Length: 115
Length: 109
Image 1 (tube, helix red, strand yellow):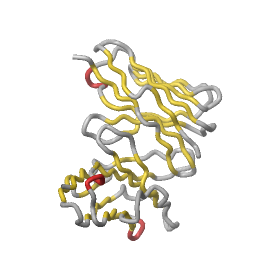
Image 2: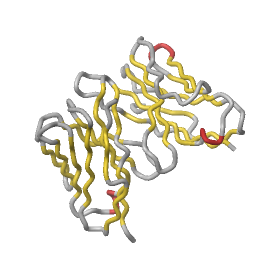
Image 3: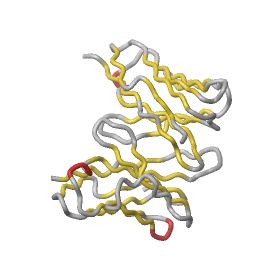
């Protein structure tokens, strides 16, 4: 299991329900990123974790969105009271954050559909 | 804040024609990265350019980094169906990446 793992791969939920999306980064990668990608669109930054530092939450679109990273490894993105406009693919990436070479490695994403 | 602009948004080509996408940053970059996202897939790292004026080739793909380290381009020669996807450039900002909007390469039927 060398890559970034995300689960579930697909999630269908009803408007108003809460959802949790999981990301398991590459072992040893200290940085973890969440992005949202709507159909045919680019990458929308959501949140960034780096080691034990406070996360950069500047991209979270509303207070319905939150994320945590436990033990510097697995991360969970939680969306409360989902809305139809939350429907998108949620991508997680991790990076070893070597100086001058912060390449990001992406998981396959979670496709969220809010009915 | 720092921005990375990428054009065009789409490019339709006949198979065998060339394709080019351009990136411009509002600030000087220490490096620039290029990623490819196949339809239904996730972004995959292609290459990183670091030096001013650097040119790197990967088979039919040629990547350039401008002398001022504020712009970059990706050129694909003689496109093939396997090239279909969206190509993103990204420049570092602290330990994050500022992403271009991507250029979608579409092969005309």
